[in-house]
Amino acid sequence: MDHSPAAVPGPLADPGEILRRVFGLQDFRGQQAAVIAHVTQGQDAIVLMPTGGGKSLCYQLPALCRRGVGVVVSPLIALMRDQVAGLRQLGVAAAALNSSLSGAERAEVRADLRAGRLKLLYAAPERLLMPDFLEMLDGVEIALFAIDEAHCVSQWGHDFRPEYLELAKLAAWFPGVPRLALTATADPQTREDIGRRLALEGARLFLSSFDRPNIRYAVLRKEAPLRQLLTFLRAHEGESGIVYCLSRNTVEQTAAALNAHGIRALPYHARLPPEVRAANQDEFLTTEEGLVLVATVAFGMGIDKPDVRFVAHLDLPASLEAFYQETGRAGRDGLPAETLLLYGMQDLVMRRGMIEQSNAPAEVKQVERAKLDALLGVCETITCRRQAILAHFGETLPEPCGNCDNCLTPAATWDGTVAAQKALSAVWRTRQRFGVGHLTDLLLGVKTEKIERFEHDQLPTFGVGTELDRKGWGSVFRQLIVLGAVEVDHENFGALRLAGPGEAILRGKETVRLRQEPAATSARGLLKKKNTRLEVAPQDQPLFEALRAERTRLAKEQNVPAYVIFHDATLAALAAARPANLAALAQIPGLGASKLERYGRAILEIIGAG
Image: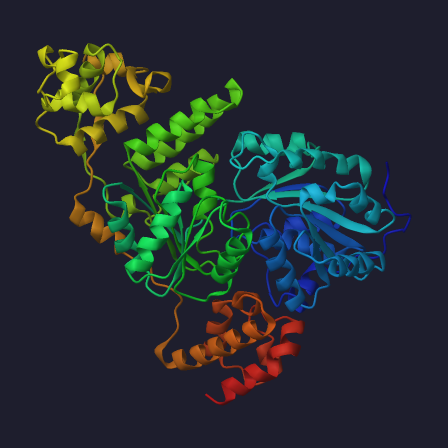
């Protein structure tokens, strides 16, 4: 089945000229120029670029340079809507076909496509593969196919979607049409899967640094999660952010608690009525400041909101890829942002239990365990967290980042060899049949009914661990699990058993250094640390606020998020430069020809009024 048009390609437009005229940008970033030149010339590509690194431009601009329409595979309606709204602000003919459109709206998109009036068309993978959609494309000149969030094609990835597997057929159905797959998170195994499953083995790989230096990473032991979260959020008063929870109940309870403490919060999870879920998402995307969205991981993939200033996790994510993807929703505008992950022993046990109890094949479970272990390694590391994260993605950061909690407040360590031996002895002497709670009671010498029933108060290890409290032993066991010295037996109610170096440590053949858990006072200090945001000089602040007010008015008038019209960085540049005419205005980043025509005079009037 060949859907290729018979038209002969015409001359290609100049990418640099379109970058300046349409997008209002003077220069490409990173590998953008190389990717765009490669795809514009009709070649396939796999593009790995961090969130906020400018992936969208890598397919939008080639679609404008080439003849025909660029077809973009996108997994979420919210993402399509934002992208289309942003492109229309730039004067680009863009549309999406999805279930949110009325029959008349879908008919209009189809008519525009057949008439050659569209330059970019967005669709979900399942819709693109429908016979009526393929029939609609029949004979249409196609500039390219862009497969966004391409990690969804891999069963090793953190968000596998079976419908993505069918996209490999595009190569046979549309021969000669360049295809590019794009993602922000893919370890080497997932990268290989993307190429193989999308029939892109011969595509050129563009691998940018995964580093997001503007994001600060912090991890704390979960003690009183609501109190810890409130301390963190009060350092972000007036800013928008996301709080991720594992369960729907936790989402609802946390949102209610935040509102009770005077922090405006909305819940988001899959069981909310669709109209409530959509309304909460829209409010978060369009509110300029001061709204917290409390969500399960059902929210967020591909969210374009650039001014998310923080992301907090109240529960442990499933993998380091999921953690990186979710935290990557902060600071897309390149300005400083903070993340916080709270985790404890229960998180670890629960996540491991979810893997073991799933119906996934054994090899998939093995990979999921390894991915969870990689995240736990980042949680427990005493060195730079960013170096550990990037190492997982095959990238080396030569020096510590200076912008994670371990760099800002170096972790203290202690010789935990004796404590580890006591913990391992407790595991061994109870025949590897009991979990952390019972083993801690044994070490602390607590005569529970269970201890007495099994006569564990007669063991030599009973009461030998009173130098640590319950939290201290929880930390020891957690770190031993991360070190691989013990493992959790999920088929035996979370019992611990010796593994890996556990026997060598127990016999004194290996030593162990453990991380010293920070005191509550130092933890509060860490939560209150905040990066400096957008720099606006005091004398420019009134003009900046006047421009923001006008942006808000325009956004409400057009029913689009404010950032679709202008980013904060553009407003700050306007307030600092105070351009006096359209020619000077055109030099401000983010002001292309369409936005100059639509908003230029109004901006100059506001600037002229001081």
